[in-house]
Amino acid sequence: MKKRLLCFSLLLAVMVSAQEPAIIPKPSRMEMQDGNFNITPSTQIVLKGPGLEKAAMFLNDYLQKFYGFKLAVTKAAVSRNSISLGLEKMESAIAGAYHLQVNRTGVQIKGDGAIGTFYGVQSLVQLLPVEKKKELTVPALEIEDQPRFAYRGMHLDVGRHFYPIDFIKKFIDYIALHKMNTFHWHLTEDQGWRIEIKKYPKLTQVGAFRNGTIIGHHPGTGNDQTKYGGYYTQEQVKEIVKYASDRFITVIPEIEMPGHASAAIAAYPELSCFPDEATKHPAKVSWYGDSTGKQVQQAWGVYPDVFAPTEYTFKFLENVLDEVMALFPSTYIHIGGDECPKENWKRSAFCQQLIKEKGLKDEHDLQSYFIQRIEKYLNSKGRQIIGWDEILEGGLAPNATVMSWRGEKGGIEAAKQKHNVIMTPNSYVYFDYAQNKQEDSLVIGGYLTVQKVYNYEPVPGALAAEDTKYILGAQANVWSEYMKTPAKVEYMVFPRMSALSEVLWSRKESRNWSDFEKRMEKQTKRYELWNASYNKKYLDPANK
Ligand code: ACM
Image 1 (cartoon, rainbow, N blue to C red):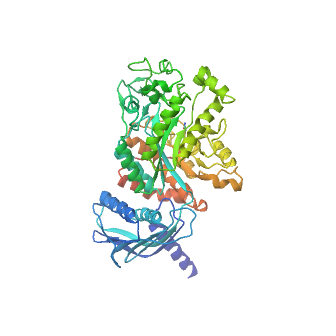
Image 2: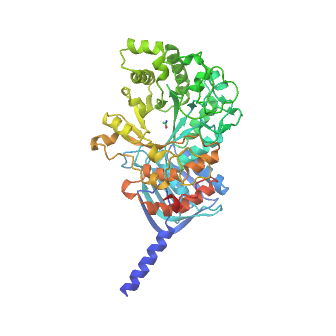
Image 3: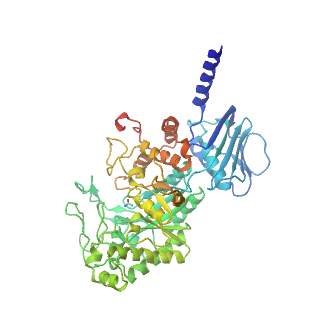
């Protein structure tokens, strides 16, 4: 008898787990209950508090897009056949906690603030079937959930390749669907300046276009001899910032300095230490078109023609940043700071004189002077800077937040110096790296499987306990040299983004690869529902 009871319990356990919804990132607590609720076109969304319209709007947009119907939204008391959105104070150090209940009469979501309710809606959409239907059965259950890290980011480089505004919105939706909260928009590069600046129209007239692009892997097997480019108008930028804000996502713009500045210099050569010198490129790069004067680069890599630390440049950057700040309300402005070769500064009489005058040690100190000056300006306007980890060299600007990309070292060092840190180590979260042993299309190199992303721990073990509070969270970087299309971007981010979302949101103790692997089966069906490309070979044994 005992044996039979045991078998029955086991069977029941298997049945329940088979029905268990595959929510990614995994909630803190989830309990299945008996019964279901059917969402149909006659279900109503009930708003029980202020500021909940965004959550309702997202839910309705999702239903419309993927199931072909929308629900009425009301503030009246409706007790049955409803999805009620409300608020409830919860004990959570980080914004976004929520409580979700589904029973036979409806759905109740209560958030610790409107942002929590919004995340509750993100869990609800993962309870929906992955087939297009008009009756959406969701299982009865109770979820209590809250985020682990305050900064949960995705970066996108639109300099190497440019994506239309509709894709930027889609990318922001992906961020929201993964309960992430930051979009780092990398807007300026050697290969293209992508944001309209009214005071400097040549930045986009000249700097947003290159005459050709290398074919194949750097340095290339030729040049496609096709003019390439584009930029976002200030109106489009405003539209994106609003679109993101409606999804509780902060957009952090990146304006690169002092390196990766070829496109800006092509537009305004006086920004260079050597305005009269023609743009250089490696001899192996096949160049197309005019090669006199300053040019937007046609190949990837790092270039020596960087911003001169002159008063002209600082005034230019302050004017650019003024327009940027007017468009982006984010506290943070990313100012780059990575990969700035010092050779032009070394051979510039002006730079050498400046080093002497300011009592600086060398060109690294000069970079630190550059960044600190910009920090001072942005701080005076109430903003804070983020820089890549090279900003540690020559001394950190007093209030800077560091993005650790060359592994974890920079992050550890910055946290030890009591600076805030965002972890983006290339070894764990560079989504431009290959994800299969054999890739069907060109990628930059490296090798980063979804499992490695899943096992990433943003708080470095080497950090003393009292310094771990400086790790605000982490972010994946999507460098676009080898991502010509939105579909390629999707292929590179999925499913690694889903793995990262769990690293950033879920409790550390709940991370379990085989459980995630099981939930991924449903998640890949969601990618298909969204009509998103993804790496279908992510579990290929060849990748182990
Ligand atoms: C970087 O990948 N150069 C920040």
